[in-house]
Length: 395
Image (cartoon, rainbow, N blue to C red; front, top):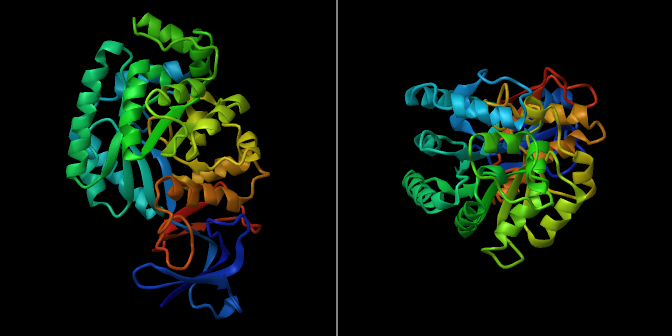
């Protein structure tokens, strides 16, 4: 039997921490018990900081790790797309794989136990198959021209077969409304729904909303300037357009697990529409990426008022300076100080595990589970995170 104690224990299921608590666990990492210490002075392994379950990074693009430090901040979505098109393949496949491997190890050492990762190619398949960190891989597709739909789907099916040869949980998924023809959104969604999971970039920018609502703005100008097709002007939020495309291939209600990522421009109208038809939806936030590209954040108060299941992701090193879940949590804490730290921890742990259907073993410090344990050091006396807070894996 092993035992570790700390000033705070955030279980992942409660906003309130256990103060001066302990966690007992077996040699294989199974949680045995959690409770308050009778006397901290008598604890042989008492740490300053907070113990938390292993994190679940609900949105990452590991294969873009070679792009760290290459992008100009504050470019908006149109400018970001231009940079991704220019820089994505600026280096060798070997270097891409080496950078991905480096950051996969960093994620594990920081205490990330599971991840929803986006792949557009096979660069990270072997790496993920050999890592102790669980990943579900979303094979993201693009294609603005309707006539290309069949060939794109054929290509991503072959990529899915390759991922499965590595033993990965993987399936196609649509990227976003502005990078895909209506036909491809529907076809890729059908592939993902058949596997039970979708991850979709939703309402990430004002430019995206302007494109769908009125056909105007920087993103619309960008695509037309490159002679690319744009999605239909609907006069409605882009999330409603996505739901309508899902309903082309799935009778309501849609009970498969759907992750809507970013949600910067989420409105009550759009979330009501989504919840009307989508019965197992989670809402990922990647605050540092949103600030990097748009200097904007999702409407956390609105999301909490509606009881949405929020998760936390890091996005990629093309739109972030690091893949650090604690930094994301600190950003959320500082921007929304009314949210208890324990609630943010639950977003970064148990909610993500729920989306991945791994909450039977991951995401919370509960007897019988094996979520991994991370220690967050350099926290304030009241248990809040600080700018110097960092995490390390204990088990």
